Structure formats: C-alpha cells, structure tokens
Image: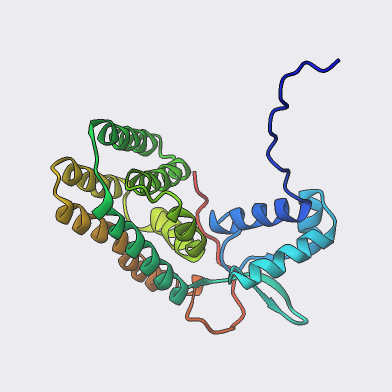
Length: 243
C-alpha cells in the first residue's frame, strides 16, 4: 500500500565511463598520476575494476583537455604541465574573482564564515595536511564568489584550471609555505571587513599571481615537469607525494 509520501529524489548515478573519467582526472590533478606518468589501459582497467572501453574513452576525453598525451606506437602519458594553459586559466580566474569583489557586500556573518575557513586552513597547516589545505583553499575562493552572488561562476573557473591546479599543487610541495597563503587570504578578509574593496582586490591579485613565481622556481629545478605546448614525449619524474 502506498504511503502517500513522495519518493525522495535520487541523484543520477554516473555512468561507468564518467566515473572512470572523474577518477583519472582527479588523480592527474592531485598529482597521484604525476606529469610524464605512462598510462596503460590494461593496468588502469584492472585497477579500477572496469573494462578497457571506459578507460580508453576517458583517455580520449582527457587528451582533449590537454591532460593526457597519446603517441602512436609508444603509448599514452600524463601530459606535462602546459605553461600556456596555466597562464590562460590564471587570466580567467583572476578576471572573474577580482571582478566579483565589486559586487560583494559582506556582513558580520559573511566575515565570520570566511574566518572559519581560515581557522580550518591553519588546522590543516598544523597537521601538515596539504591535501586538506588545498580543499579549503578552494572553499575560500568559492565562498568569495558565493558572497558576491556569483557562485555559479565557480563552474567556469573550475573547468578552466586543471593545468593551473597541478601547478598550484606543485608549488605547495616545493615552494610556497602554506602559512604564506593563509596570510594572503587573511589580508583579503581584513580588507573586506574594513570595506576597502581596492585593498581586497590588490591582495587577491597578489595572491593569485603568486603561482607564476612558484612555477618559475619549480621549472628551474624540474624543467621536465613542464611543457611549452610542444608534442615532445614526457619523461617521467618522481615527485613527492601529498600528505
């Protein structure tokens, strides 16, 4: 007998191909699959418990994103970090995030929410949990867009920054201390609390552009992690694992 209660809406399940795509994309961006890593369809299919077909289709889509390179008669590899794509993604991110500050009216609750994120970032730093800090860094920037009424713009930012995210993760491993990033986030919040949008804009731009200096330092010591857009075959280099 029907209870009369409406059925709860269920989120649509991802297809096997889409699940495989998301898993591989996440591993590449998180550097679990580092630049230059060879990709075997057979090994990935076995590891993920799927057939070769969704793996093959996923690698094709990741190649279109510039995250995978395929060399006939040689194989597929995780692409090197493309410096041109990093710059393009940074341009998109800076343009959207900084423009949104002009529409941002932050009340006490908004400031408190941002400071809660900062407190969680400090906890992640104290634990040495870089992966958690990266997630909280994303939360901070997404929250700025939400407070400005532009949360939907995060989709555009997120879709453009796969190569940028890999560069950012490399910088967290090799160059910029997490404490510096937290200080920069704090400067943005302090300026917003003081209703000084110009200062917030300047602090945010300095923060976002820091990745370029990080990339220069990493490229100087590990040039084989980066590409200038050419189709040269990647050479795998071991990098430190994230916490």
